[in-house]
Length: 460
Ligand code: 5GP
Ligand code: SF4
Ligand code: MG
Image (tube, rainbow, N blue to C red; front, side, top):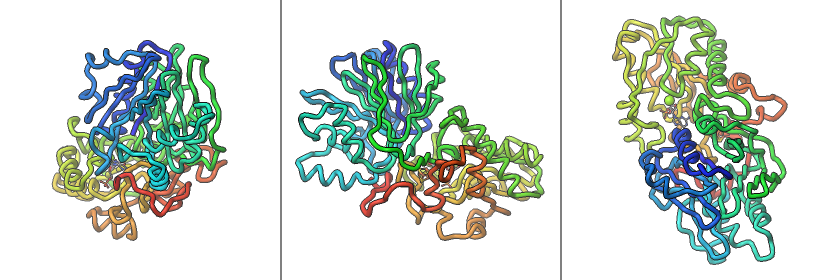
């Protein structure tokens, strides 16, 4: 998912709309904006793309000097309008809107506990757990302390934006797993999952929200405090590999440049490879393919074309939709690949749907050899932190050797980037464990506790 928030601009709702538009790649199944003028919360949300959900007419209804929004990347049974965020909770003691990117690994436990105390949940979403925790924590505490107490009970990955009539609150989990940046446009504070949402509204990136940090913006300005001590920093590696937009920076590192370095590193790790052209799989692996080409000296070509009118296929909630999606989405350029030995660079292999189809497609278009090179290590473990990297049984690399995977996708050769090579190429400071990155889906070593009843996002 992608989240956005802004405080202190008469254009708050418009800016949120533009911000969500820039974050559209992070979720395409629903979008919502909640705004306030200090008196109540106004909400518009719906299923589908940002453009479909908001028309100018509707945006004019929102108004206000503060707003939050979300684009939703939903999963099998978490679909439906009731799960589209921000979720709004109205109450006589003050209303609250909440949007989140991530997955709370102890949500089932907290939910059960809350239900035993009488809470009734309206959605399948973890976000609602936070709202109940905030509302239930008792009496004499200030709102700020209630929010801190509630946040401190959550485990997992969460980047929150919370809007009340008198404040915008922003929170990042203690490991800082999902990206979240703080910026400024004029006098207004803004927050977004990715910095590309700042560029589009002319905002400047100030810094990343720190792990375990709670930021409160209200009429007194910005106030930073902590709800938890910083744990080992564990920024999601897949943000660098696949998820984020190339023009975004995460913790000071530009995504395009990081991917390009991964491509170069891959070329160095492969060593000698005989081929005529390098091609990327649009859009996510173009950067890595350019890097591979530069380092190997094999010319980069447009071997595959993507239809602009098909969304992200991976995000489709079922395998048949994904397969149909790949077919509609990508076509080979015959003149480029016919009679050629092709290096096909992709950012990752998850279920193998894309690679397998593309190898077939390139061979049918006349490629004499197809060498598949992947700008990340094999994915072998599920993600519990909000990226839909499914169950082990669906991951093509789990329990298989590289050679077995190669055979399944019918490539002439298959090479993955090494974990060390990837960390090195991304280029974060190596003073922290794993350079402060989460590598769990590559290694099975999770940066947080995982509970027996931890529910994978796509199982909700
Ligand atoms: P596969 O087709 O092997 O199941 O998935 C790999 C392809 O899906 C890659 O081309 C990658 O760009 C794309 N992809 C889309 N969403 C995701 C995601 O959430 N994680 C990963 N790793 N790849 C994704
Ligand atoms: Fe990202 Fe993988 Fe960690 Fe999930 S398990 S947060 S996808 S690095
Ligand atoms: Mg791709």
